[in-house]
Length: 607
Ligand code: F6R
Image (cartoon, rainbow, N blue to C red; front, top):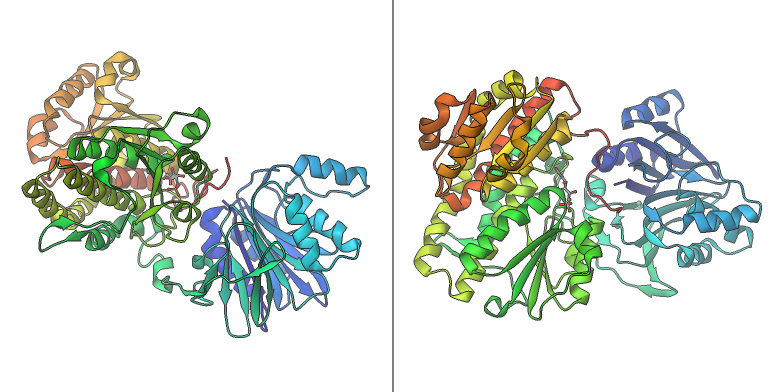
């Protein structure tokens, strides 16, 4: 969602704030702004659209000052416009906010009745106006902040600048993430360690309900009126992780990182010598688990769909999967001795967080598969299974997905062993296949010219595209369709191949490309029949298979991609690569903004 940054230091802060906003822009990019103190007064520059517009505004009207805050926005309340861009300010304070103030209408009405005038359509303005009203009642900033926090409902991470106070910056957190960075005579507050990375590696993470007072030389953190200590840690994020390297887009860089990050992830779960899996210590006895519930959103949900097959097959464990935004409101009964796995790249997704809170309240042991170990979802869980994908900046998730699959397969193997449903020999066989996986993913990446040609010649011309798959290839078909929609804006749907004949086949004509994800596994023949059904109705088929599958069906396809042979269990990880690159090259052909597609943002911290 939105990204926030605040700096209190000795040097002019505007260039530093802009630099940090560049690293946060992936979170939201419909407007941006910064505010500093100039001779004690709040001054700000804001611009609708991407950060470059704000940079142009600053070039025309520079902003001085050694203390300031900045924001990059994904609009929730109030359309994207300069008027609604943050920082939202009064004459006393400027505020940047990530999250939603749920009772803003009630607070706004109350303050308007008192004669306060609002200048924006944002929920954030009630925070600025509330703090201002308390300051006007002679409260000190600290008291005004605490009193305002107590009146707010919803989720927020806030940074607040006070007019006349060059020595003070404040922050607060409920629900949305917020980190404090410790520099040398300079202090920082920001959404995540990524934003702070070039400034400092010494970072502490605020907990829910914390509020923090920053001066140039340090930070004091409070819960209510009680001062608390938050450990200062060394962040492992380096400058190299947050650049594009030699790639044109973050998405392409992240797709190409997959052999390495799958390898890194496997390194911490799989012993190459014994080919056995070891999970981190978890409060779960798999042998006693009665049911597994898996929940997530978007791409992470498709990882759960694949994992359902794995847990059922390898561990003979009953599995329910459900998107978090539905699970949280459905009030499903949850069994004794049940485990709930939440999957999330960011670890911040608010629906997923709410779903695990429901499951926890209903007696489930919660495990989190997350890419950000300090995240809210990780902290709310009983055990964490980290993915080692490194920072994912491209809005469309790629390497996070394949590392989620890698971790989930390892978890299913461990569960199978503990439940006595997976033999040592079979575990070693899968272990060997996993060791070879990064090299196979690399081979799939080497077919880039083929993906480019199919994208340019077939997909980019289409108005609608269908993706078909069976078994674990069904979620990969869904993922392929989601990737294409997200970054090329072409309408696409994923279907279980066997469902085609129950309706969607009516859509088939020579203008609708159909991408068939079909490794030659035990159900290949069934998918082959669906392939023939589409062919018979004039459909333009793109086949993604291996040498055996392409030998069998390739001559009937408009185009085909031949992937290396792989153990069918691991096929969904390998077969993700082509659907990612087909979406990427189609978007490139259409000239869309690959890393920052319209209307989207990374980390969905609102409902
Ligand atoms: C799609 C995509 C989203 C996310 C979803 C969940 O490319 O990135 O569908 O997968 O918003 O996000 P996380 O994994 O951060 O919970």
